[in-house]
Image (cartoon, rainbow, N blue to C red; front, side):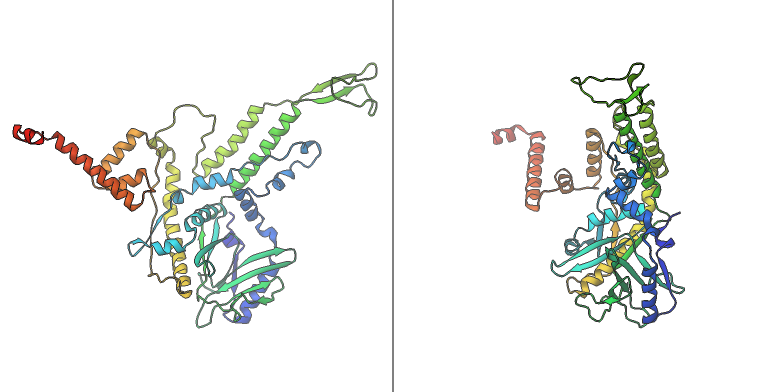
Amino acid sequence: MYNFGKSVNQIIIPELSEKVILDTVKKTEADYTFEKNNRLYESLDFYYNNDLDKYIEEWFASDSLRQVPPFPQAIVSRFARARMMLYKSAPERLINGEINQDYKDIAYQLDIKTREYAELSWLLGCCWMKSKYNERKQRLEYEILPDVKEYYLHGDTEPYGYSYEIDRNGSDRQFVFWSEDRDGVQGMHFIFDAKGKRFAVNGNPEMINPYGINPISKVEYPSSSYDVVRAGLQISIAYTNLALHLRFSLGQAVFEGVDEGQSTLRGGIDHALLIPEGSSFSYQTPGGDMMAHIESAKAFANSTAENNHLRIRWGDSTGNAPSGEALRIMEIENLESRESDIPLFKEWEESRYEIDRIILEKHNALNLPEGIIIDFGEVEFPMSPKEEREHLDWKLNHGIITKKELLLYYNPDMDEIELQSKLDEVNEERRQTAEAQQPQSPLQRIINQ
């Protein structure tokens, strides 16, 4: 089991004193080696499709195997998106029972960042997010931190401090350290290098934590999903082999009965090939069934998907598209995984909101009340037009949705004025239809005429 949060990143501080803390932080980063977390960075590269050639080329080192470029397959990010159903649609964050538009506006790209963060948390097994306030742009911003050191006081279960790397340039590496107020000792915040030398952050010469809390929140799974990364590598190797097979299927020139250097092969119909008497020349093609190789590569993907409660529908699949209910049945295991994700990410959302609230208050940007309620949207599967109409009619007839919500369902971009105008138009048409269908007395017909 590879759990990057526990196996590598937890450090115990013997006692709460500035000298001991600084000595521990200095020693921790001095002892750090990049190779300890090489799988973490490999996972990040495969998630972001970043420089994947280097992972494939080592398996094709000879000249004959380097006749085609590597053929990486971007499956890791697709697996992560499919698995993390919880953030397919943005959750509602309710403050005092309603959406706080001021917080929604000031939390810049929160929905985008949380989805990326959730996918990485599942893939890596553990991930951190830092909330920060941009004074120039007057907004909250979020930074995903996949590799963080946690510092614990002896016997504690909650981190006292964090450090993470911000600049890796040869030997000139730099890190950031945060610690919280604890037992009357003020928290610290500073930059330090690999030699342990400290530098003040701009605007904070005292090197203290201005918030009193660590601005870093965390999600941790029992294990990582490194099998998805390894499957991505295996499939990339398999498809690179297929590309080589396709190239070599054109044939390899073979001479028999000719000593080395006696003949030089020059292709083209305008060239004559001269070979000694008793020798022969032919093209040989490799054996093997390409379709069998493709099916083997698919088997890697299928087995990995099944192990992670996912399914794959290949582009060459035939038959009618499954209904919404059939899709729900096929996704039942992933839906169960989604349910288990809810308490994990609710707790994280609440802890991140508390950090946001304190940061905004410290910068005099926005005062928010304590506590937030997170309402994750339900997973929706595509329905036929008939199923969709029946579903919406049932909701409307039972008072689950209003006419306004029904209009917004079909056109979510309508503003309030356009929405009210459309509602008035619909109500007027209904009134006229109802009046036309009512029976009229002879006297009423004469009056109407």
